[in-house]
Image (tube, rainbow, N blue to C red; front, side):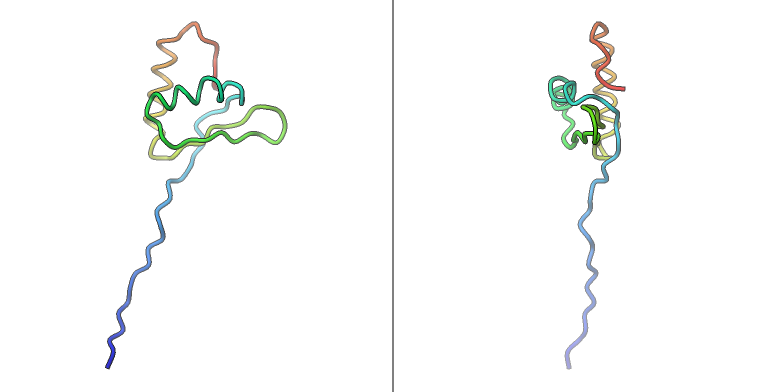
Length: 86
């Protein structure tokens, strides 16, 4: 007689993406993306609004604190730079 073995099927874990801040595509492409990459933030993307060139940056929930620290550090070291995100 065969034994029925129950196997638990666990869905793959997903890193939930959350909104970090708003910016323009131009700022994202030319500055913000590089700032985040240099700060070792690995998973983020720009989502453009339906109209215009603004949008939001979404980031993995696990990297939010690291990204905020990197951006805060950038702002303190570069006080003469215009506001790149809001």
